[in-house]
Amino acid sequence: MNFVEELRWRGMLHDIMPGTEELLNKGMASGYIGFDPTADSLHVGHLTQIMTLIHFQRAGHKPYALVGGATGMVGDPSGKSAERNLLSEDVLQHNLESVKKQLEMFLDFNSGANSAQMVNNYDWFKGITFLDFIRDVGKHITVNYMMAKDSVKKRLEGDTGMSFTEFTYQLVQGYDFYYLWKHNNCVLQMGGSDQWGNIVTGTELIRRKDAGEAYALTTQLIKKADGTKFGKTESGAVWLDTARTSPYQFYQFWLNTTDVDAKAYIRIFTLLDREVIETMEAEHDQAPHTRILQKALAKDITIRVHGEAEYEKAIKSSEFLFGNIGIEFLNELSSDEVIGLFEGVPNFTVKLSELSNGINAVDLLAASTAIFVSKGEAKKMIQGGGVAINKLKINTVDDVYNTDSLIGGKFLVAQKGKKNYFLIIVE
Image (cartoon, rainbow, N blue to C red; front, side, top):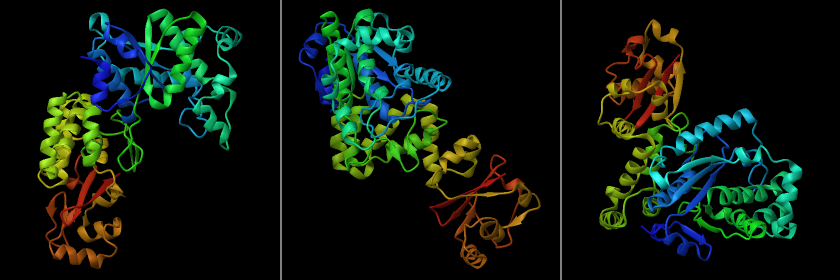
């Protein structure tokens, strides 16, 4: 497998330094990508770089995942219009441990010579004093060189300016590359296209400090076809951690991809081979309504991130919402999973004491909650047979609900018609 060619046909390659492909074709090489631990979970925006490392390892090379314990304390200005808040050491350490566990889901850390390896740049920066750094590193890169970088120029031209802390970031990242080149024979740094300036600062430092040779490769920044940011929903980022984004929400994110985006994403985010993908694309073009690409994309990524069982649960959750599975399915879910399933659905909180003595359907739907704006409207629709609680049609306006009606001891699910759901949370 040719690593660079693999990235090309998948539409991932952006920039590559001359000589990089030739070097990689000679045999096993070591390369790395850095991940800043700004949160205790990676999100789908990180998946491009994770996939890059996966392809790198599958091509027979040795991948290093650098988790930036030191750079996370500084903050990368690339692509940012304002300085990030710096994290405390305790928060940073928690984030580092969480991110490491997630990266271990994707890379093989026990495959012999090309086993993946995790490194933390705090390990080599913690012993370097400020004076050591400006003497041994700073003298090799001119201010003119640093000022020419787009990430610096854009911030200096903006309203917020740039702190000295952020200005030095490219030197700090450049030294990462130098250290890994020197001590781990890492000859290649990879990253998103916005990292090109930082990466070549590393190659320049290696050249000027030790007359060494190192290489750079960047991948495309992923955007949606309509120009909006990839990986964002109305509720925010789509995370890999189930506590932040449920497997059902994760699955739905990929399933709801547009046809145009699905054609790009199935190449970038799955490990399906070219022949399989091209066959799927042809089938999809013949019958777009079947959403072959979206289903394959959502299945592949959900299983790799969350496992087969969570994928099956996500499928059942979809079928539940579309009426093919009974209410008993919700008893298989945790409270958080139920709330995640109904994200975006109007929800109301009712006191447990109100339900303890029993409450009739009209009061529940139009007084204790605002599912209906008036009792009259609730009565009318109930009498017309168009309202259900827990997927059972309300027969009369006098039907009573109590704690025995609760799902998981906490929830009631109301429906107006077939598709308008409301979640009632009883506390």
